[in-house]
Length: 171
Image (cartoon, rainbow, N blue to C red; front, side, top):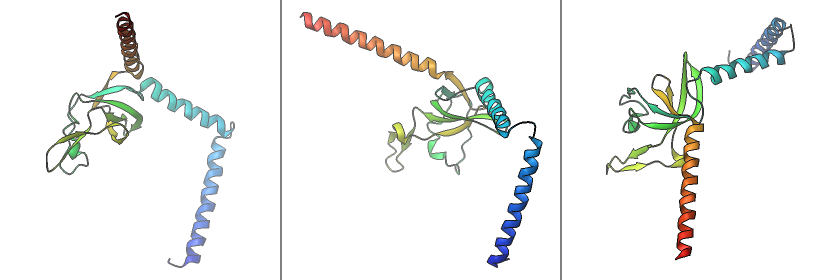
């Protein structure tokens, strides 16, 4: 079927079938507007992630089980920091293959120069995310908790700076 006309005819025949299937699917949901059912599915999805996901975006997690990274893996050059107790921040959460997964950006990501063997940290926006199942990572701090601790430390530091500034003015 290399003839363009035949391809176009087949395409439109398939589109006609798709339209018929769409109408059939709409009939299944004829008890109310489609928006009602879309809203229900959105609520189910939201409940799944909010009530049952073991972590959420912004949480700190750690690897608690060794990840088997073989030499052919794209992660092979990362095996030096993808180790048990490595800490990272959850950037996204998903559900695949019956398990929750987290896209994690690790705090200590680095790369090793193959010639000099020098370890160089990867900073900020250049860091990667690694998709790990709940079998490998566990929450250690919620986003709210660790952000709260950082804010408290910042307030304490500001207070100390203010005290030091006042003492220096007295001298």
